[in-house]
Image (cartoon, rainbow, N blue to C red):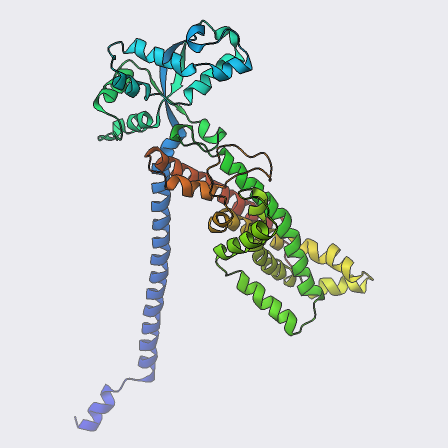
Length: 432
């Protein structure tokens, strides 16, 4: 075999080249698909880790420790002779709780030990007893076995007893012995923590709840929705149906698109300058928070509304105008109903984004400690993300689980809003 024949034999044919190329492309496609699946897997794994961590840390906040105690409503100790509002306000309900504790542990004599013993129950238990007497004045002079709210240190210790290494925190040896005595005598009771959903913020973790922040978020979103949706839809209709194409219109469109990507804290600074400094509106109220979030949500609503209006086929407009409808009738009676699913979806997603924002609300003072539950958009309030931020910064261990529990409530809120957006889109959308 000569050299020319060897070269001819080693040179691949066209079919072989095509097969090699196909093989490489198929292998590259498999690798690309594998990388995509790995990315999805990493995302799902991160989501599972996130939810597992939040649920494991926060599920304990839905249970609260109570101590069963015999409470004698002694009129002399309470310092009241009649159940009136004035006397109840001054009554010494803390004293009858302390009497019950000393009755169970008569060996405690020293002032320092008494102070440690009294610290096992929550300061808020006295308000619970006051409400009981106010609702039933015949309790005066009687003895009842009641569930008294435990202090947050007791609550944390009892919840971690079964984990091998209980969290002791600020409890000393004698307090641990008293708690164990309560456990052995079956006086420790774990109940569903209704106070977490029915009370506002508190410096005492066992009394802290999310109702104030939840209502603050609702009032803030109410203002945001009532302003951002009509203004955003009106702007989108004008830009799509009435505005002439010129440099000024292009300038507005470019700025709307840019505003959608501006960091939210910038809108907070804008709200601080306009609503608080210029108009002199009060701080920490949902009305101002809603106005600031409206500025932040408007670009999203306008862009999604314009996309929904563009998606309506031109034949719908032409048919309406051909039948003699005016342009306003064509828009209101034909274009708007067909574009409404997209508009509502964009508005709800924009409001869901606004619900999770913290930075712009910090700039207008909605980070203040507010224990009262707001009743209107003009009452001082905070919102759920800010409440989470405040609790996460608290040193007490009991606030850790309340932070995670509040995050669970916020996530449930967001999932509900996104589910509503999907349901509205499926329910109202029309296909051509």
